[in-house]
Image (cartoon, rainbow, N blue to C red; front, side, top):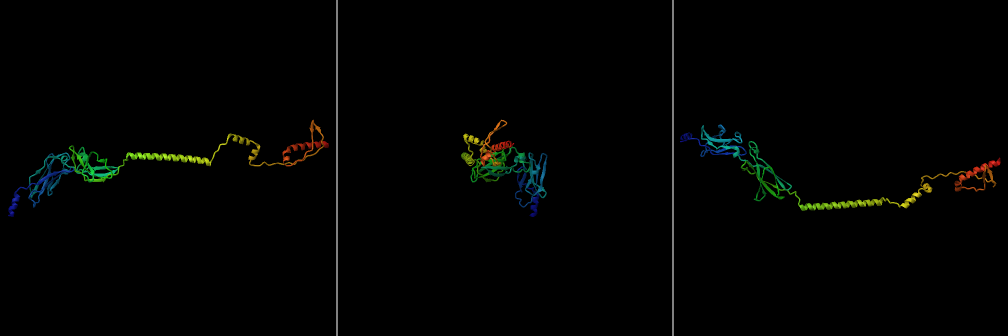
Length: 339
């Protein structure tokens, strides 16, 4: 019985792969399939090929894997066909072929990377494009934009924004409230949507905007403070000036008093009093001779001699010069009398 079963299996055709599917993510290309039905105890090998503009080229030959990666064998904008078959003990099944396709038309884009930060009452969403397996996202698709959904944590209602920039500010958010964000890439002309990013949440910071009434209060208080400061400075300067005048007075004398003092300063007594050194007085010995009271004339001039009293002290000093002249005259008269 065993020999009959083996001969029957060898003579029958090899079954084809089941559920052949083609997937493309981020410009990659993979062909996947399932083994033939009711053959769980059989070990099959598989061969997969890609058709270029001329003919089929093998990519995975005699592989036991249930998938084959064609990413490095296709270009971004080319048209291709794929096919796969089952192999068992040197025999092969029929080919299972895919339809014609272009990678940029069938590929899907994975979720972008999202980072949140909050400052001054605004939440910033920083978006990074998903990496492509070949080329860059914006080199393949134009235009590229982003679908941004955000909502308060715990609420079902979501708001949406579409922006082309990869850095977006969420405005008019309530301060100190948790907000959650998820982002998807909109690409191609038909606005295909990529996978949404994981939900990311952040607490919105307090707003930096100041209410108008608070601005008015601050301006009023500032004006009052400046006014009070100016008044205090003026009063301090004024009282300091008055104090200096009291400590260091600078009186003005009347004109009549100034004239009187100027006249007094011209008197010899005041001048003598203002001198720093005292005048030295000189004294000379004075002798007075007494003669007969007669009158004599010499050379037509009359000489009068009389009796004078001897004086001392201040009178001698004041009359020194007169007595000296009288003594000289008396001396001459005695000389004439002797002759």
